[in-house]
Amino acid sequence: MSKQPHPDAIVSRGAAVRLGGRVVWEHLDVTIGAGDFVALLGPNGAGKSTFVNAALGLVPLSAGTLTVLGAAPGERNGDIGYLPQRRSFDAGLRVRGVDVVRLGLDGDKWGLPWPGRTRQAETHRRVDEVINLVGAGAYADRPVGEVSGGEQQRILIAQALVRRPALLLLDEPLDSLDLPNQASVAALVSRICEGEGVTVVMVAHDVNPILPYLNHVMYLGRGGAVCGPPTAVITSETLTRLFDTPIEVLHASDGRLVVVGQPEPPAYHVDRHEH
Amino acid sequence: MGAHFSWNLVDDLRQLFEFPFMVNAFRAGTIVAVVAGVIGWFMVVRRQAFAGHTLAVVGFPGAAGAVWLGVSASWGFFGFCLGAALLIAALRPEGDERYGEESAGIGVVQAFALAAGFLFISLYRGFLNGINSLLFGSFLGITNEQVLVLLIVGVAALAALGAVARPLLFASVDPDVAAARGVRVRALSVLFLVLLGLTVAEVSQITGTLLVFALLVMPAATAQQLTARPAWSVAITVAIGLAVTWLGLAVAYFTPYPIGFFVTTFAFAAYLAATVARNGWRRPWRFKRARTLAT
Figure 1 (cartoon, rainbow over the protein chains, first blue to last red):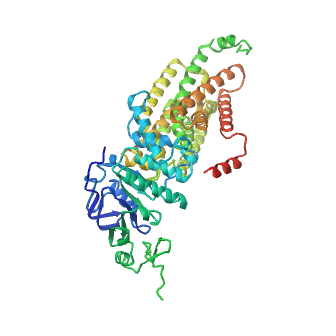
Figure 2: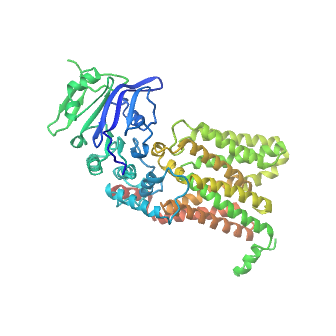
Figure 3: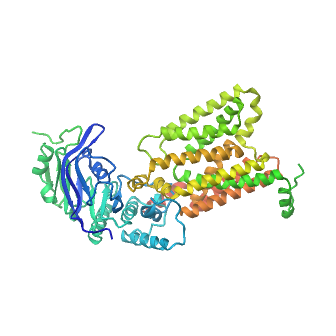
């Protein structure tokens, strides 16, 4: 098993990334503990996906350090399950969901998967196991382009899980799902986080569907990032300090959080009118 | 020729293989159907049919130019198909490895290639008789040496494809995750275009620049209608490619009409049958609505 005890899944100290001359974020000091379910929040353009790509070693740091599973970014990608942003399969793609999951297991190996070896049975067993874990058994044999967005998302989570990762990096998996599907996928990820002991970092546009399950949130802004329990981070004071602009967090009667006055870089305009 | 179709199928087969030119036509057709089918299967999965069509089309100006310059048409086929494959790979926008969204760049290459082909033909006036064989192939004059070269190129192309089949499928279906897993998505994409270019260059010397595309796209598209299992899908692609090629050769032998027409027509019929088998006779919008309700 690859879940040997790392004290922390991701640690950054003074990390910064520049893309095309622009500073995406800098002075990033965050610690994501092993086994945590962390939401990565922030306005559009704050660099949430860039953080995920930096953790995978796909984007180099311009300053500071970033340690992922106790090693430099990219060195332990075999122990990371990754689900990229806004992925949906072409409706005409005639490949089954089970094949997509299978590619997550051995798709990077050269050659053809020759049938009849003992490894084959092992591979099938693991693929079936992970498909059952996400509850995709009913449609995993259908062409992946034909199943619904929520079903595709479960297939992709199974693909990310198939190698028993120690860390899951999920980039907006709830995006483009309807509310009931958002809730059930969020519950599924939480169950995996606890049941399999996997650290989960989920990039989210809206924190509310995952709020009940989170240990920590990491809020990316102009002044770096704030990391901590949701109740400590998603407050008017913390976010106002992070963005250096007046921001208000409202608590709706159903427990939902609404962030008002959130800046949308690079325009940096404030929605709230100062009367 | 004295070929007469009768209902005595044994006699028909004997007639079919009576002359060496037909034996070589069947040998070449078999190799072409297998290689074009397998490469075409990946082409269809990768949504690169437009790139495949363009590579097939640029063989024509390549060969026409080679003949005008007085060198073997083979040089033209290989030079232009390979050059166009590299050009398409270079024109592809950086970071966009998904489903071949490079169509505008490919269209530019294709339009220019065709224009160049017309120029070469008008420059070499005596060439007009050869256009037919460039476009529609010359199945019926294949030498033993040509069959051997075809076999070597075909085996090499399939071996190269087999070596990268799994990561290529991963990169085709799911480029972002494949890249995160360390698959060289960009390099595989260039390699596939080069393999496609080489295959098209070799195959179109037999089939002509029009039939090669039919053999690339039609069996693969048909097989993918029938099954979503990759291994089965490739096997069915090859089976359909072989069936339509053999049948086309046989029917053309007993009729005065061209081989390419029969091969393409049989492949088209197979595609139609597969589409109906998959969707039924229901009208497309009803099918779509039923699917939406189910999810």
